[in-house]
Image: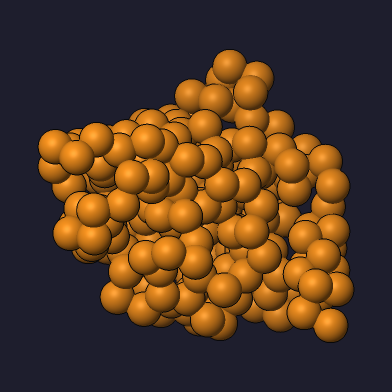
Length: 196
């Protein structure tokens, strides 16, 4: 069972999902600590209500100092709106979820509603989400799980966002369970083999 740190910047909807799935026995992980770069983040209040150690820390060094005090195998970015640089021993252990099907609508500047507005503007027929390992480049790490959602021409960006978030609620726990089952190195070595 993996020991997780959850990093968030906002309302903690993904934290809610993790907490619910753990309670249902559908996510084989333990949340050891929650950290936010926003002191007033609703996600921190939720974490404390759920009984998780929860802290505000703004820079990578401050975040990593907190993580060092907790048993952590995996760092899950959950609406964390900064480029996170982990300590060396967690360099390949950071997961992120992106609200599109990478490599579409990803990279620097593509996050949150910006993604869904771009999807709407382009008129694509399918969107979705991608759970991937994070590295020093935005949205470049090994992909673990992708989920597709069909779109209707009349869907607003807000409706697209709701459809994609529903898919995220399934994809992120599924990806964490896959990492627990196969191990972190499985995904990195697969990407390295494909690149070589």
